[in-house]
Every structure is written in C-alpha cells, then in structure tokens.
Length: 319
Image 1 (spheres, rainbow, N blue to C red):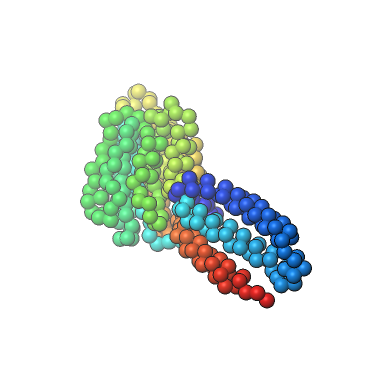
Image 2 (cartoon, one colour):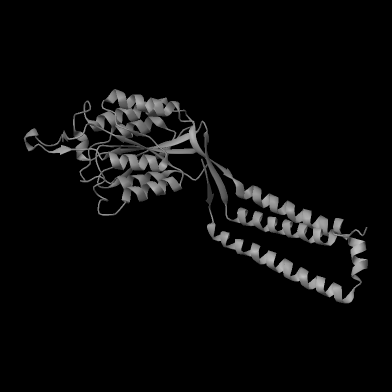
C-alpha cells in the first residue's frame, strides 16, 4: 500500500496553469494558421513542412505541460510513502500511570509489569534506534525525549510512579508521542500501554480517532497494548468498595487499525515481555518514503533543456 504526501500542498493550485496552457496553445496556434492561410502560399508551406508543423507544435505542448507538472510536483514537496523493510526504527513508549494501574492482576502490579517489559524491550534494541518515554494519566508528561542513551532512559522508566492526577488522556498521549519524532525517513512507532479508556477526552467526539488520524498523517504506527483483565478490582482501594476497572478494547482497536499497528491484550508479565521481543524481531517492517519532489525538479530542468534544443536546433531545420 502506498500514499502520496505533499509538504506544501498550496503549490498544487498551480495545476490550473496546465489547462490554461493547453487552451492558450491551441488558441494561438489557430490564429497563426489563419494568418498563414491569408498571407502565404499554403501548398508551398505544406510541401516544405509536410505534417511536421502539427507534430512540432504538439511535441512542444507536451514538453511544456510535463515541465510545468514536474515543477509543481517539486515545489509541493511531494513524497511517496509505502510499506517496506528497514533496519532503523525509533519508538516512543507511552505508559499509563493512572491510579488503576495499581491493580494486581499482573504481578506485582500493572504498572510494574509495564516498566519491566519496557526495560527488557529497550535492552534488545539495536544501538541505532532511538527511544523516548512519556507517561500519561489526566495529563501527559515527556519523561525522556528520543535518545540512544539507554542506561539513563531505563532509570527514568524505573522511576515512574502512579500519578496524582486523575483520569486517562489517551488521545493527548498519542499527539504528544507523535510530535516527539523527527521528520526524517526512519520508521516511527508508538507503543502505548494502558488499562483504561480515554476519560479526559471523553467530552470530545471521536477524540481517539482524531488523534490516531493525526499519527497516521505523520506516518506513525501505534501498537495498542491493553493491560490486565476486564472488571478487575482497583488496587488503591479496599476490596470492600468493589470498584472495578475495565479495558476499552474498542479504543485500542481503533488506534491500532487506523495506523496499521498491533492490538494485543497480554494477561501476564511474561506475555507482555514476549510481545515486546516479537516487536523487536520484526522492527524492520515500516512505512518508508521516497522524496519525489527533488527528482521532479531535476526532470523539469532537463525538459526545459530538451525543449530549447528542439526549438532552436531540430525544429529550425528546413527539409
């Protein structure tokens, strides 16, 4: 699957020049032919040029149309994105630190399981990869920007604690994580670990979809990981309160499907670790880009030279 991206889509308005060019070309060609019929010997012109007059004008029109199209493609910053294989991949690990992550259906807690698995994942990555970490509850914090210094990164992962801010802002976490990636040609993926639904952005319609579409527009893949069992007692209140937390599988499926990522629900720490190992083993799968804009500009200049040569050399010859 492939898509076309424009860094400066405003230049696409210049495409209206192409039909204008074609219309003007045939308009002035018609006027020139009418004048030739009035003031020249048509039979002599035909004997000299044959059908080359028409062929010449059509060739020039095609060259000029292709030249304008090439320059527009170049000015618009056109890139082609496609699914391919690569070895370099960057990640942002987004860890839910809301109070429900204290539940003990994963040993010792959901948060501790996520931290342990994240550290193991970082250990197995290639040294060329960069990893960033964010934590999110009611608000999102950048724990560490993208870096290849893994030792201090793991220390910051280990230092994560439950947030004092209530709520779970999944959509905000997606947008923040997406903005952490640089605009280069490396593969980009968010690994989002959560056990709840998007409560903070619930007042906004389709907030998860909007955030996922934003990530997809930046060619970022989201792997949604739902932690724990459904309807598990929260870990920060006595069992007598009988307060349970669930997993919004619909939201996790939406963000994964929108960006071409995974949707997984590990039940144990070992299953979570196994999933991270699997992601690392196939990290060469990514969305790749081909910068068409620069090549289009080169083609445009070549076409200009070809047109100049044809007009000043080839088409000037009289047979």
